[in-house]
Length: 328
Image (cartoon, rainbow, N blue to C red; front, side):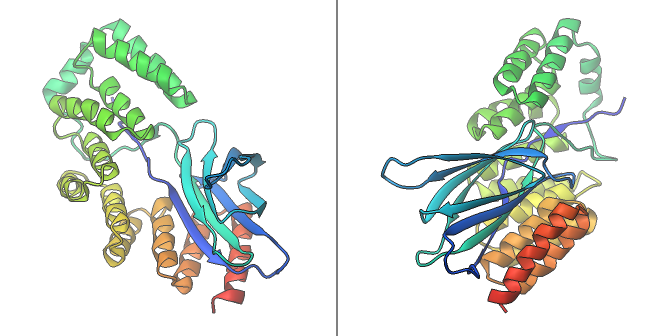
């Protein structure tokens, strides 16, 4: 039976582009598009804008549909913005408007499902002993794990952890609940707790590429970039599909502001899988950080082709029009 392993995308896949608003009487405005990693607009989502200030101030919460949003009349310079949607990993981002004058800021957010399935064709998925061991799992452990999977998909993460824990207590060498518990702790931004389970998974299946990728994500969250990059190098020697290891390497370099290396690796990942929206997202991030608006426009067009949504196309058209007027 074909096996699938689960990987957690826990980085905020967001890009920011600051432009002067063409209407002088407008206050600060935040516009955005929220898309899923499979290229569809997220139908329903919530945006929470929390002002970054020492004074008590109202937190603004909005519900949106059809994949786009606009927040108008934002009076503070800095906000902490959180985007959430049912069955997706939430994204938190810092928004920092220019100090003087009105402005409009644009963001594209890529959301990943709480359980992301990614199969590596031709890759090792475990030793013979591990596969044999999984065939001997008691029924009660399997039922507990399956219950945990349903909780996991529904976003009931604490209940999923409890169910996975039950499966592990019944069958301590049951690798699926061990590694899935690790991915939940990554989603919860608790890399130390994640590593406890992921190391246990590696003890059971040292060559498993998905477990090793999740370990690399945990190391990146801990800012151990050298350790993450070294592990990602080893993963690429064992998998046929190298797009995700290249993408995660690109992110590690981006977080260190090593933009040229990050861009090269993101392009390699996209050559292997042009549908990898996070790759286009990262190239836009890199270009925006360097104020290379021609590259931002180019990669927005590439992302438009990958998503092929009328709503997203309109969003891109609006953004490119503003750039044309302010950043030529």
